[in-house]
Length: 276
Ligand code: NDP
Image 1: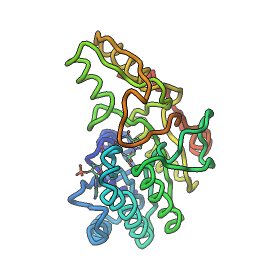
Image 2: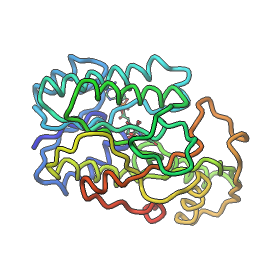
Image 3: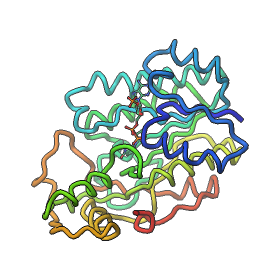
Image 4: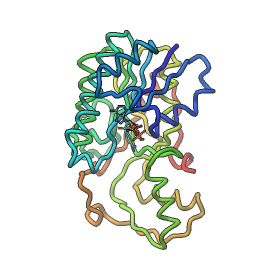
């Protein structure tokens, strides 16, 4: 089985690379943005012709949530046009697509975990483009898995955990929002869940939610990071209004993981057991 990973040098891409030894039945090809530029159909055709994948994992995306508010065209090009290109090329080459999406497709007005059937209503440009990317796949390609995740962190790339560790070593005090509720997700766990879908051999196509289990605020997440890394800092909870950002974020984005657990027998660890 041949698996092509686009966005292979991003955070999730690196977490997937680390799992290569655990999936000996899979022949992986990791492509960065110069080898496989999702915004160029020619670039995708060339790599699909060369690698001939059975599966493509799309770990490529425009992920700068706040910057997207002033770079809507760029976010659209990568998250919508790029995903459409990939879905079309997958269809032409008979490959299945595993695409990663986000909890930011929801408005956050619920108070119980979001299921795959819940209505989407993105609050910002990033969430909107990610939702439109999902819709392109649903229109074009039957053989797809769309895996929505949230609050991704790991030892790779730039993420909240790394920012907290850096700030924790630079400052004596820090304020973190305590009124946005969701679930941190270790990118290594997401990577393994994605590969379990492929290894299962099951063709249960559709949308799935995958985050770690449990519920947290960004303040809870920061507190756990500081505790685990033995960083002494005066950590203060604040509300979103005190930390305005260009993009509006869902106030609640916990996701229900029942569907992915049942369909593929995937076990989901609790978030606080996974923070290093
Ligand atoms: P990163 O930002 O770490 O990686 C994204 C990758 O996409 C980069 O390696 C980048 O390559 C690549 N990329 C950008 N433009 C293109 C292009 N035109 N063609 C090919 N590749 C391109 O993202 P993450 O690994 O953190 O995110 C993985 C997925 O998870 C994304 O779909 C994201 O939307 C989703 N997600 C992420 C969350 C998070 O908190 N990070 C939360 C919820 C969902 P280069 O650096 O060379 O430009």
